Length: 111
Figure 1 (cartoon, rainbow, N blue to C red):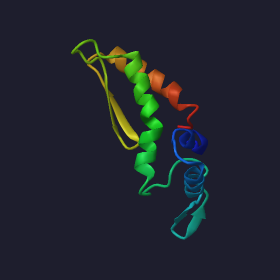
Figure 2: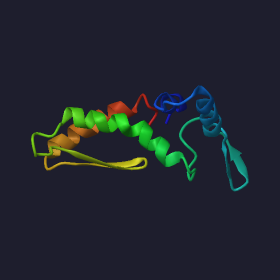
Figure 3: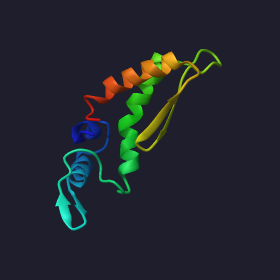
Figure 4: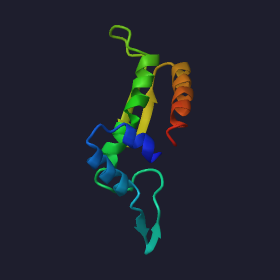
């Protein structure tokens, strides 16, 4: 995920946003080898799950806008856990259309 996109979704004082940017770009040490982190969030970081959920909120909104509930009938359900999600519907066509819409939505985000 692109850091600029992620930071644009977080509404906080600029000093905190600067600190978050530094944290995102701090890099990781894997088996004694340092690697830069130019995108994404550090795996295993305590704040990574909430940042992923903040970043993916608009994706969930997109699916709900395309297929809103019709009264008590739910056309599609998107279930998220951190950076994983599943789209559920009784209609395969709806799932396929959601897959296309989500794929297009994810491209500029860097996913």
